[in-house]
Length: 235
Image 1 (cartoon, rainbow, N blue to C red):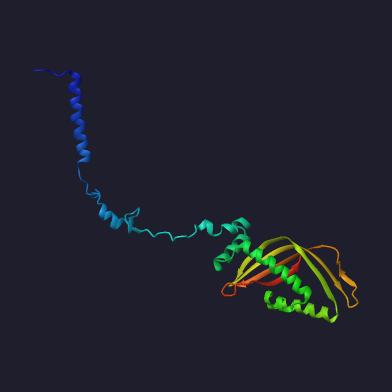
Image 2: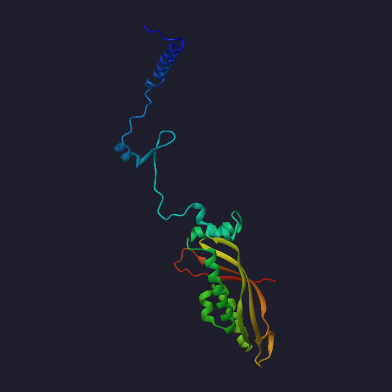
């Protein structure tokens, strides 16, 4: 008969103790065990619902394909105006009312409108002005043209270009979106009297002109065009 040395006996006793401890911990049922994994059941139920933190069923809705992240919706506006400023808030409000509104596209369109309005006023082109101006502004422009024609004065004007056009204010007034621009342009302009004498301006000098114009559009209207609703010269 072989005898075990002390070390062998010690390890045998330790193994038996560990076995019973594991059995006591792992072998008991508490009633909270999860059922065995069933790939078919998981495929049917897991695709529709997930368990929330409190055991409640949470329906996972798929993200709409092509939907922009919240931070991306106003990304182009945030590049133009610092988030949190009144200007940024105003443009965001316009975007909410009119998803097609984009600062860069708006400024590009305003540049074309500015040149058309300036030249139409110089030429006395009432038809073009009527399409681009609000009723109040149109009446003011036409009144000035009428007075000029009564005095038999003529404006000779040449549009050189726009040095800068910046959005300085934006807001919603009811359903109307209002955007104000600071404009710095270059223009050659001279007014001649009935005798052909220059009474204002210089036909050979490029002058810098600074204006503050406000355009508006009813966001409920199907008409996508903006109209000039206010003008003032910047000193």
